[in-house]
Image 1 (spheres, one colour):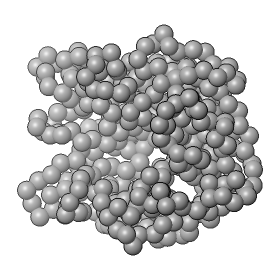
Image 2 (cartoon, one colour):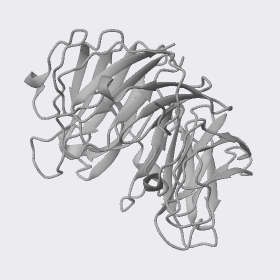
Image 3 (cartoon, one colour):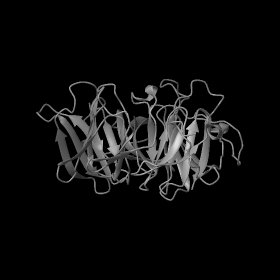
Image 4 (cartoon, helix red, strand yellow):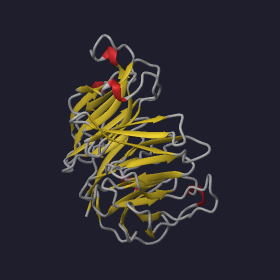
Length: 364
């Protein structure tokens, strides 16, 4: 059955590998084999990303709790064909992950400079680019952000651009400053009026190298990096593909009861609605609980809720396949929420993390 209850066309072959992965102790890692039913633990603000060729899966996340010195952020790389652990990078307990590239190879993190042997003259927290394979940290120039800044940073999908968000005392206080990482030069500064009168707001460089001004109540406004022209607007609970070609907008009636209850497919560069996913929304899902992942730049999208995972074609919204819950759900976990997912750039490989169970699936 499909998530909405209709008969589905099955085009899915699941090759399942269930892994041991603990963020609390390195020795908890095991070497997985096909259909091995073992356990793992990834918690908190977790990012799952396939490498550009789909051969690796990179995961970066934090154990629950921010105070225990034993609960580190950890970056783990898996071989996607087998699920074997390739390498593990442990980070300092005070590390916060701000943004990750499309392939998961690089992340922007905030951590104490005194713990990473950067200049002793800087004993405050700083921003760094992290190589998730080696653990190498490169300092983001302090001149890019103020000493009292919240250090709200982001990185483009290809790792070329880094942005810093700040607010000024002006008619257009929301400010996104974008730099070229390789040359360490200023690319552009884009500003905006507050996008909402209440709630939280921020701004960042997008995966495809544009600028987004966002508010949790109103959604996002996409601005052309070069010209500052408004390109498109999307409601809250929206996602754009890595190349900006597509956008999927989930229903969220928290602040607008007249908003659509469908999962809309939109042009990611103009905001024009192209259609909707062939999915029947449950009453419990109209307040922003749905999520998903694009399959790189391929015309496929993976929709996930707390009970189902399914693949759809873009822009038609046609259902391609479902992933039966029995093949990925961690039945032993208590109060398991929606699983974390990633889809390979070619749209042929899907990783699903439910509770402490990580599985890989082939999508034909």
